[in-house]
Image (tube, rainbow over all chains, first blue to last red; front, side, top):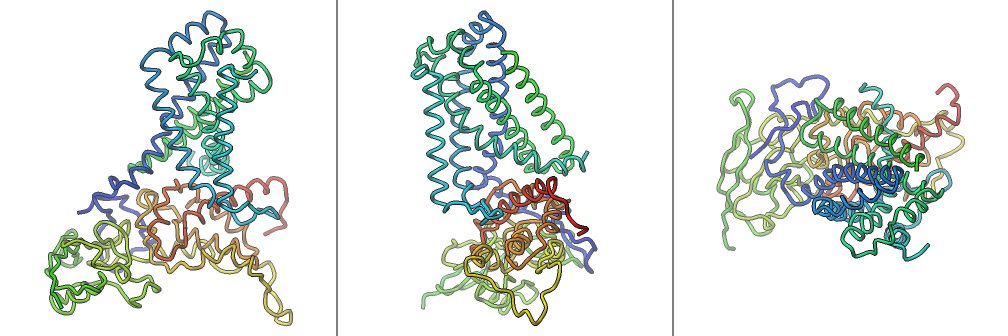
Length: 146
Length: 119
Length: 247
């Protein structure tokens, strides 16, 4: 079973000597698990956009004075906002895990004279940085330090 | 427009890449505290009183942190929404979608700069 | 020897007779050690001589026998039939125009390969008296993996960007261009990086990683493409800083 793809996919600049059937892909292509994970990865873009604009609202309120800030904090308690931030957290973790697994092999063997560290080290470094930064940000924002 | 988008791709890719890398790292703590911790009462509300929050945010480090937090995820988001559109057979509408998405990211970035400066 | 039968649902297309591709079913007695290709050859030899399919080396080095088996791109000479169930679907490689039955149009792929200038480019050819280029094992390691591509095109069938963006250069071709960019003997990086930022732009790759998942030779084209993005950006940035002499 097949589904159509872009009708010009992999088509040469000059037609061949016989009539060809248009390119196709298997019908279950977009629903196999690995492909779904990839599409989900792209879909987190929507969440990132929204998180960015919510954060913008937060900072804007902070710059608008005491009353605006109190009002914003109150709004953040709305169950819809909470649910959104849970989704955002899940998205961020999903993105991090997938991206970290793909990042080490995407470093070229050298850029000028500089060489990247071995791939397992890059992976460990990414996770260490993520945990470290998260701890610091959490501690500062939550008032445990500073 | 298509040619302009092609010329800008290296820049967009850099912003998008940092949106994933730096943006994700910064967002985790932010969501944990500002999005969930304080609103759910897990973190004491004293952490984000106006006085404390404004002090933290208006420091140099605070402004830089917020600038990165506000700007970078927008570019990751815009680029991936454009990718998603192409994944679903959207080549025909790609120039339009890309222009709209990157404009949204650009406008958001501009607003972010204003928001951080006016703190 | 026990005789097992499997059912094969094979895509057929004769441009002189068929409006569109159709499917035809064959019952094949299979041996336990067969690859998918053996079943296809049995169909052609014993059941239906009109079936057209490409194959050559029978040992996963020529890249001719790529097809969709049960919806996944695979080399039919490499995949064991015992890995599949009693009903096996065989279709031509996804994302390629279909010439006939299981044979796809290759020319588009060859054009993309040519477009990345897959040969050593030097400003000035080395004189014979100077002898051969010297290259250390470390320098070889930097691109060796990407030279193992057998041009089987499975990665093009797996790639969602190839399916949606006809201009995209594609995994194997970018990996090949990157192979030359990373070759210490080559001096054509700037030229190739301009091609990589052009119409078929490497930045169209959305890092689905499907190409590397299906590659039978472990070339890891996804790594090549994303390394190429990095190099293309560095090349673009340094273009602002340095001036190039009339290349």
